[in-house]
Length: 126
Image 1: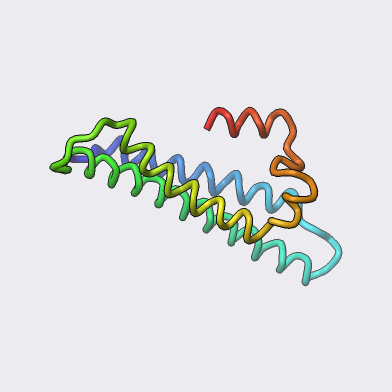
Image 2: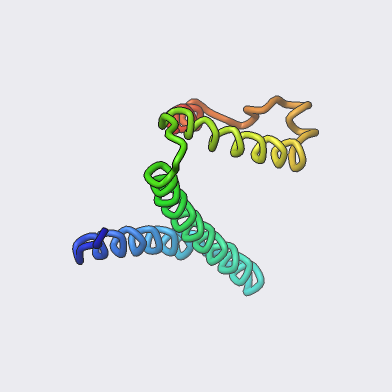
């Protein structure tokens, strides 16, 4: 499928918007306590921006790859079955890392520690 110039412009504008918002938050939250804090803040902002870009690319790739699998697979399965297969792997890997990184905190305070109603709403919407 050919991508039009308008589509390239739209994705570029979206990426630029994310970068501008991310960097504007950096400039509005600068610390005046010293150079070390400023350098650490800058490193964290760059790391955050790189994480957002990686997330965008991997999310886009997964969507395109999933569509390719659906269209070229010899075994015809419903979309719901394919979604369940993918979700099961995500659930397994995600659960492993949650328990590995925060197992003690989860046992002590529960899985949804620190969640307020807005966060829960976003999780349910996803």
